[in-house]
Amino acid sequence: MAEFLTTQATAYNIENIILHSKQKLVLISPYLQLSKNFFGRLNDADGRGIETVIVYGKDELKPNERTRLSKLKNLSLFFCENLHAKCYFNEDEMVITSMNMYEFSEKNNREMGVLIKRQDEPEIFKEAMREVQSIVKASIKEDRSYEFSQQPARTSVRDKIPTPTYNAGKPSFSNILKGTLSSILTGEKLDAYCIRCHDRIPIDSFHPLCDECYWVWAEYGNSDYSEHWCHYCGRESKTTKDKPLCSSCFNMVRNR
Image (cartoon, rainbow, N blue to C red; front, side):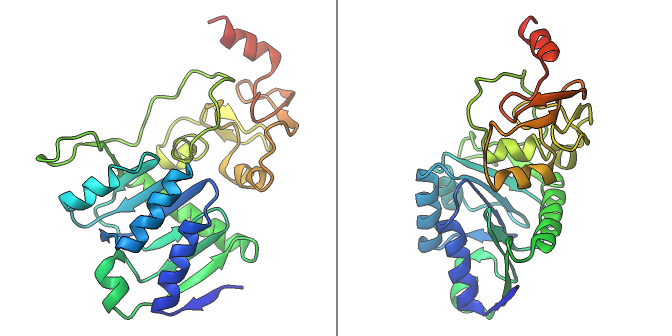
């Protein structure tokens, strides 16, 4: 059941969401000026290999804030000019709130929020996720490899789909946003198939599940679990998340 949060409870639960993230973390805040405590938690999460996505808006980041964020190796940073929503979540919990990740808000404002646990409210969690996907689609991914004396260069979210391979290793959360969820985030062609439900999705052998099937799969994370369809041709075939192609498609790709 959803839980109402006061100002202090909101800050506490956002910190816990960062602290208890296992693989992925999404922070959406129009105004971004991290307190020492929040940045410390993000830095710790980055050290654990947590793939983090931050979407901010309204104003350019201050140079010192951008310098701090540039030290996070697993961060993908997005800008959404008309962003007003504030939402923070990991795999299991989400806070939707009035609070920005802004040090002044944390210390001085009267805020409120709602804590949603995926296990207790799966439909609400899913609907919120869809809205997050829409926000990311409307955002621009920032290139953080700029000179600090200049305005940051911004590049499109759209990335080239990689050549399929089974030696790519564990996909990052930012790649999941651009892969499994890319039909929503980037508008790429639905020219492949979910290996579990057979829905049309963008071709990406790193992420051969649609977004809904991915979240079901993520509860267990078994890459060898037997699925039903070939990601490329859509024919019925025994596949897995790590090996999503039938033998014919795999041989075709291997011989290119």
